[in-house]
Length: 91
Image 1 (tube, rainbow, N blue to C red):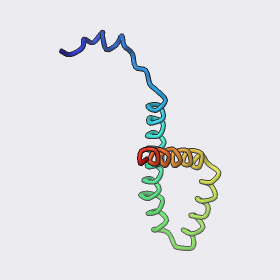
Image 2: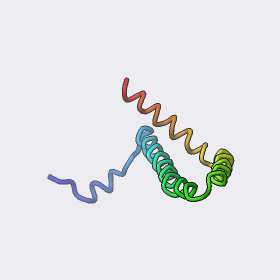
Image 3: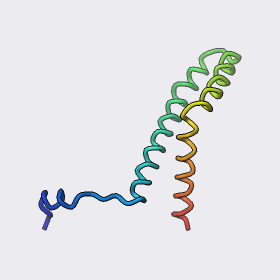
């Protein structure tokens, strides 16, 4: 027998730390995959269209700017979190 709607609503949803961590990890990984996708589709193709010396200078500028942006604070926890989860899941 299926539970009634009011029974489901009255129980509420309680998240434990593991579930919250999984949600945060999945969002961080989603953001990172979007960044990589955008970079590979748009930035690299745009750099390929222009002359090589100009593309090299543009790429060096991108590298300087990305280190000073929110990229690393988002990338590092996502990487450590997924690596830790993979290590924990394999043991």
